[in-house]
Length: 379
Ligand code: GMT
Image (tube, rainbow, N blue to C red; front, side, top):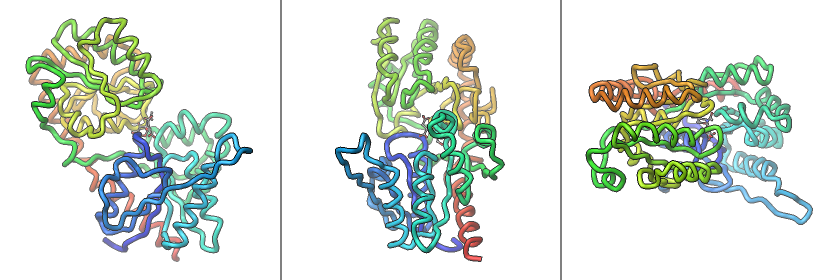
């Protein structure tokens, strides 16, 4: 390692792709010898153990009768500035532009020493929230003011340039996965909790927001299970889950679908699946799909967005139009009909992740970006 850095990381600490990327990256950077300070509303959910060189600083907001909502963005800026000053941080790395970048820019300007700010764009901060009139100008400003901006896919970088009419340089650093944690192989007892040995398993995991189109998963499953003895597992929780449950009942599928709620350890669940489905309207990358791929599970995923940057259609998974349910049913049945094809896609999936998306490789790209930034500021 060239030079150990002191890095402040802010992210959403509940379950969610951006929080997972931020947390796993922070923990990996600490293992590489850097000092990592998470500055978040609560302890990030994957920071389970007490690790050397990792510190969690939680932001407290003060409520007051005049406030409709306590101003978290300001309290976060103050905490960032406090941690940066006391611990001598080299940089602030914020995940998800809204509101983390705004807080970081404020914190950066509060003291006598300007702290460099790196923003990582994850997806909905650009495609669903940042482009809303309430946030568009501030998001553009934040992107422009960041010392470095990264996006998790080429697609997201292009969307950002288009949406914000900016020519700010955006570096692409894709999602990554710990290939030792997410790997093929499962506990047969766990599998038997959900399916008989002669049954196949389809799986979907998400935060059940409208963009994930989880109801389509149920509709696809309903047709596939007419042809193959199959079970469906749904992991995660969110606003659309009650509609999904309603659809399961409407179709008379309650005995064949397990609604699991938030599942803590996806690395034990994913390898149980014979097929993973993610028919989102769009995905900037599709981290859950990448984790499934790493576990050697064939993935059917939306063709709208970044998934095409890790899935080669027909080789290590399938890219499908979210609205074309026939295509999802046909691809599922084709894979269930042909064990050799399924085994080939599964092997290709794992190989592609090992080659290009293993955490060590990708985190090295963030590390180089940080080192270059800190060196350039010291010049
Ligand atoms: O997918 C979500 O709704 C959660 C969101 C987040 O920021 O937590 O995920 C986004 O970031 C992930 C990590 O970079 C990407 O893999 C997901 O594709 C992206 N979600 C969308 O673009 C819808």
